[in-house]
Image 1 (cartoon, rainbow, N blue to C red):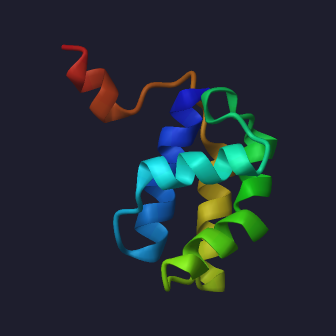
Image 2 (cartoon, rainbow, N blue to C red):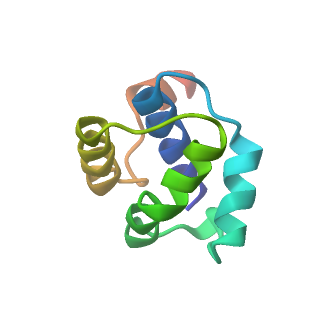
Length: 92
């Protein structure tokens, strides 16, 4: 689901402490053989390994081990079928 990709971008940006380019991450996912529009939990978790490390390395960024564990935990427990408080509020 696209919401899973959106969540991954936000959580990864928080983990490294800066806003990451969505389109570049989108392209990297396609290069890795993944479709960000239909991303499963398992695919998102697998992407957080070597592909994310390479993506961040190209930008001079690194993901400390504690931040990586937190990222994986957040990706693991995210349910794209449940609206976030922000999304619920935006619906009015």
